[in-house]
Length: 331
Image (tube, rainbow, N blue to C red; front, side, top):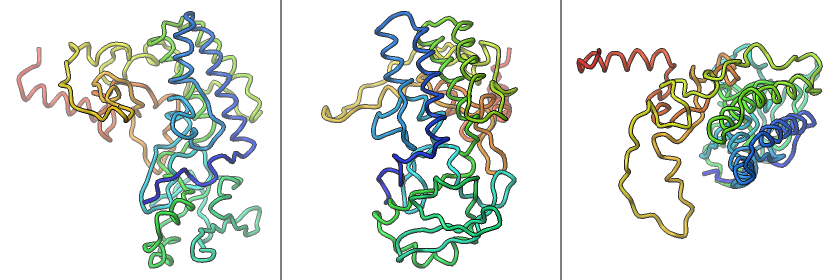
């Protein structure tokens, strides 16, 4: 299967670079509000570090904020999905046409091993190879009908061929650059305040000012109406309403049984703790609407995130209410 980096991972369009630079300024501003030097360095290393790449860099090239807010999830397999890419990447795939993107004209295959996407730009047809897809001027979508003529060839492609064509992102994970930047800011504020003890009012004001001064697009005013203003709305888990610094639903900490792990491998066991934080979408991502934005993205407890699966918060609460009533646990 395709296991390498996304194609052209180190190549950024001018806007891509400027958005990452904006987020780096936000990260630096947040870090400067963390009083303890060791804690400040930990914030930068674990959360705030940025990488001028499409996929957040190899390994731990960037911190958790860039990986969660700016980039799509890592994907592997015999498909053209990027193994992480910027969420405002202009080439998406979907099952149907939505207002979020303009359909491409067709897919061609160059030399039997390189995808080429034909789009209409300013009334003219233009070809973009897989390694140049990030240069498209607006968001385009490749639909099932565009892939069907090539199915017999594509199903025989090797892992190497898929890796060199990992150039698309799923429509449901896409968003506009300003939504990604605001999400980066919201997640950064939550972490700095709850996990590193920063003053909410000061951090929030600093970040809001940086967003307001963005020069990437003069027609876009930030912070937007989607940017929350209340501390609890930013720093608490959206499911259990408890601070992300505390155990989920304030439940007693569970002692997990130890299991053997090879000493020579980096362990991720801590990420599996029930109260470790994970990115959450209050309303699940869908193809027909761009939902990765500052009103819908939060950090929450892993336990709460797992409980939601791919349902909305309202659906999750309805489910929980039924379970509690079925067990006569209502007060």
